[in-house]
Image 1 (tube, one colour):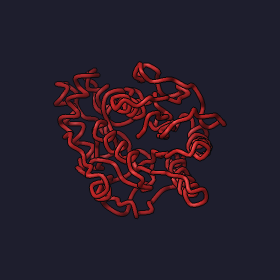
Image 2: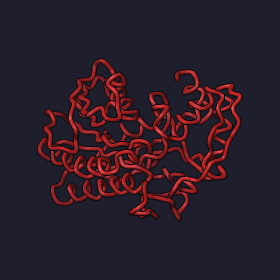
Image 3: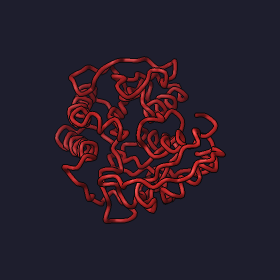
Length: 301
């Protein structure tokens, strides 16, 4: 029974929704964040705030569970601070794992589908090792997360630490920053101003978009288990970027048109999770359709 949980990066988009779900369960929650990319306004009032930079040594309060979400995740954030992103993903994960070992508590590490890079296997299973450019501009995020996974399993093997690793595919919902460089908040910001929606490349590249409430259910299912993973969490419904742009225009009632711009460096051509493990282990799969989720974002933003 979890009575007290720590969420690192709990003031960010995903972390704040995890905090909210834990509070709804009656769990006492401590949010650890340096507020470099997150905002205290995202955090539910019942959550205790602890300002700390996880890339530097710090102490966690006693708790029953640690959920590690601290890391710049949007392109605008990790490209603006490449060294800081590597430090947070590397040193930060090390400090969190060391604190979890000291406290003797389970720790769930939020990894990413980006560890698969521009995948040669489709859909992506957890057994796939990826196709990542280790020195490209996106590598600071990709390699930070890959190192974090390696470190988590090293702690499991060497110290017997109770770890769980989740690989999160594209997730969307309320509280995304319009300026964070990710596809959906960018599209919504442009559509509301009736500006052209900028689609990188020809728009035939695909994404699999999971609504945040569905994702959080999967996170908590992993936290409740003793599974080490890694486990993919995402929506296996694959759509093209061009299709997403058209749906955003529709749900916002915008007069925007679509403008094609240059392709992004190392942008994956296809992205779709194989969620067989999550289904088998937790009975988990997404329930919110893309149209439903986009309509929520259109109303709430």
